[in-house]
Image (cartoon, rainbow, N blue to C red; front, side, top):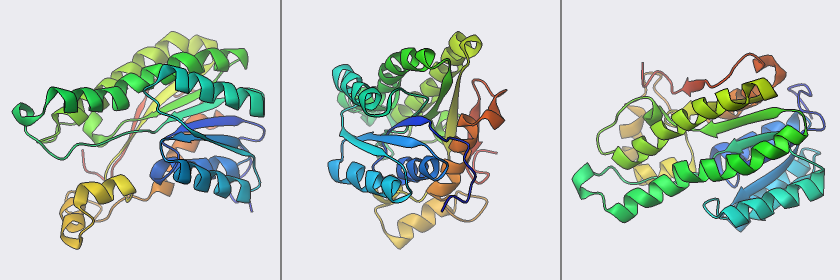
Length: 255
């Protein structure tokens, strides 16, 4: 049952990193509000499960296994989306990888490059192919997932923080390129959210979870559904005057 209204009736949404966590929660939120969704990521099983949940919510879904750092693979996924649903209205870049906290001089060039490729360069790769499709529809919205690490420094976070800070710069500049064309581009900056990535980061132990929760003034991790709610707002007509914004949702962590 749709409990959030129908802000996205007939809209087509393309979500990278949609096989779990924030991506899955956002796919389901868009479906609950009337959108058809393409779920993109490396996990075929995760993509298919998210697509199943979208269909269970009464909307059409397409699951595409795709390496977002591969421009040809992204192009193929977008082509499938247009063929299946007729166009593109909204895109969420939510794919991302992490690196265990490591002092700068101990990070290898390969590790740094991998973090930058997935968490920053691939955002550019996706956007440069999504934007022409949005222009064909007369406008649309893009949200890119940054992080609290995109607005504040954290020890051991050189590579990840550089990518997430860079993503905000990319978002702001692109937003100005296309604001007059009715394409709104914004970033979301989640704090510590209870996802599979956070399980890896904490080691999945009670002590590990307690240590990161201690960094949150609110005293808990955020829920993927809470971030999905903000992403849906940023993509809705209610946020029509919101351009190039980095929306921090982190329980007070960076205050």
